[in-house]
Image (cartoon, rainbow, N blue to C red):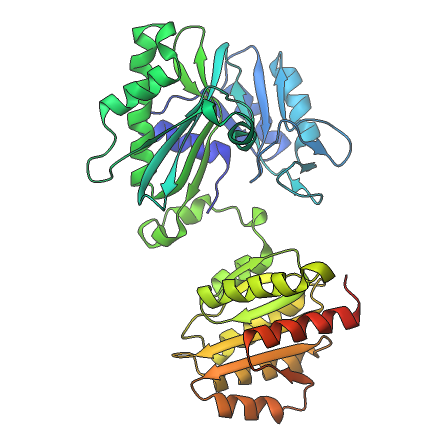
Length: 405
């Protein structure tokens, strides 16, 4: 689960990670009160969307930059009015962009040097890893590709926590000693608070880009990105207040409410599968077989091992909502999930919505014969598959025959 920068900075303040004073506003009327909370002088205006690259982004009306430096509050108010309600396109949004519905005003900082700092989970090492770099304010992926030697990593033993010597090692690796002992102390205090936030809030990622040393020698987080681990949602009822449904894919949100695991993709084959591993394998084999013909998965959809007929019906409807879908591949290996339940749900949804695209179904496992019987007697045009490879070949052929789009 992602949250906005202004929400992440509120969490930073809660744990003691220093940030510039700021205020958010959702309407032009709120601009006045938000700016009144800030001191006079240079002000940053920052559009709030769930995507990076805002500063280099372009609005659909041609206005450039979703993050602006303004010399006065009056200028900041004018710039915010240009951004609010406008659609910002960045390298991470895709061509459709994201509509800006919140503006965040912050005090502009007197910067001496920018750095990169993040904590995320290293699943291979089964522990948190701190990633830092002297190259802040730019895309860390580009730094990792072009100058990997400028990235420093430190793994933290979760049973012990972040040790003071690890913070000092990071500080010296970044060259902070040239700013004096006070800056080293500021950084150590920030690191302790930053790690505490990562652990207590069940984060999958905490990122500061840039982390800056001010001319005063203080260390401050100018930007903030926080991603929560959805698996810990049961521990955090307060997350509901932070969720911005306008930033989420409507179909994915609908799936979540229905208890389904769904992720929208940009392909043309709808996938209905039970089990995350099988779903991933299904997507892989479709991509493998259909790569040269431009046939790719349109979604990840795991109906789970204990889905009901209603959930299967709902899942099928969600797949058919996408105009990109040219065919559907149902791949079920029935263990706990019974093949007849899936077949009944698929038939019900297809008849209700009027199935207009090819449907390939591969069923194996519990009640497979009954499931096949239901499909065969449905009156629908369904092509049976015996294996995953067979199903992939047939679904690719169906899409190609109908004209790949």
